Length: 79
Image 1 (spheres, rainbow, N blue to C red):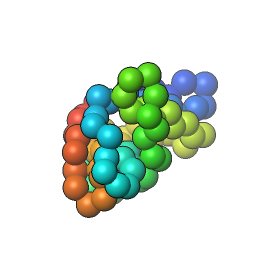
Image 2 (image 1 turned 135 degrees about the horizontal axis):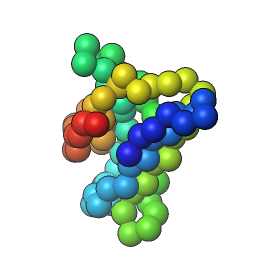
Image 3 (image 1 turned 135 degrees about the vertical axis):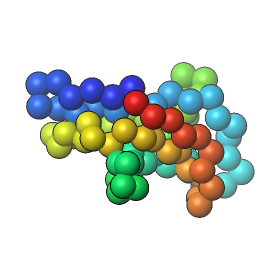
Image 4 (image 1 turned 90 degrees about the horizontal axis):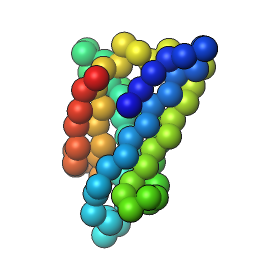
């Protein structure tokens, strides 16, 4: 999910992913022109992996999300 309310942009990912043998899952927001920002590392929580990101910058024009493990894309989505 994502939203921009009261001057705060928030982005949450909850994913059922296997435990990686090494490394961490990273979340990226992307614009249509492929500009990307790293929003953080997913943490093991609630029986899956969770990312909670917030910023005072409005990233609402970033309409795609990728979850990567190293250089490999393991999940994609769009808003």
